[in-house]
Image (cartoon, rainbow, N blue to C red):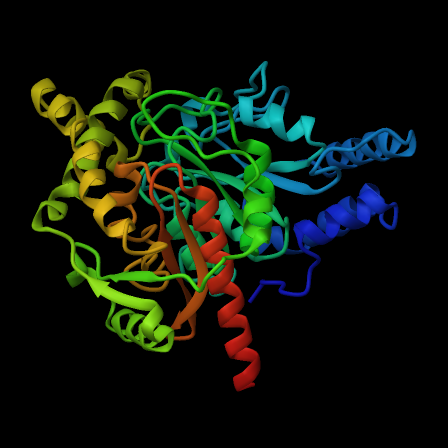
Length: 442
């Protein structure tokens, strides 16, 4: 096992660097050493250059030495999924056709990280074009199992203590599922909350940048920096997620517990783990079922995904060199009728109208973040419990509080569109409640 529960978290690092008790150069050396020790086996990084990290650290320490105000992530290490453009640093999208590609400009979210003083450690492994082909990255809990996809390296690197924070993206379940498999916190905000400018366009109706961290508080810290002042057809969460989280909940939250559509694909131990948590929550939890209409949501999400991917990846198909799974997906997407695609785009509003009735009765919907623990490395796992929330554009968080067969399994909490702050506050309550219960039983 390559996980490191004792490594300082992002909030601790931020505070110690800001106070002058710790230099960014020291932080850099600690993380360089851990990456160099673990990377040969874990394979979480698509690009890593220790000297590049050191040069950044020296520049950040010089700035800190001037006495000028520092940003909210000054000196805090962050890993970036290798579909996020970085000026002067390779961004190869996990694709043979993009080998050697070096962007001239940073993605919008990278510019925000740099303005906040983040220490960019490198680029984390993604699956081929952020789709389903299994990567070389190992799960830190069991090298024979997948870390999930497509944000494989981001989840594995945080779980292994290589970096306290990382950025990924989700189009089906590519933040929540890897977080569940690797035992980290994964946060997919409301769609549109974080700019996708400079991020590989797979399916613009679904693509959503998200974050990985060890705790909900640290996820909120990173997300606050990334939130863009976006306006469009989606509600946008206000800034100050960390402040909202730290304010605490006025009353104990209520959870609507769900066995999501396609429950027949859940592993045997998943239902028992969910039932145990529900029973422990007592009167703070109630169970419910979604209308049959929701059973079609994953098929609708896939239709949108493949149709848009066929358009946006057309040049990759022409170049060739794709995996069989990717080539088949592009062929399937290209065969989708325009009328069926356009009709599919109407579904999120319909589904969210039904969900509003549930959110009126609870603080968050609660369900497993994956059908079970990480499967073997010949797949990236099943995103079936995540795709519904990606289609709806709702915020979702995976919290590592369940265990099945000795492996982590995340609890997924979902809030209404634009309700990211309230959701994170509720997640923090659950996280602390589980911690207290474990301490009492120890």
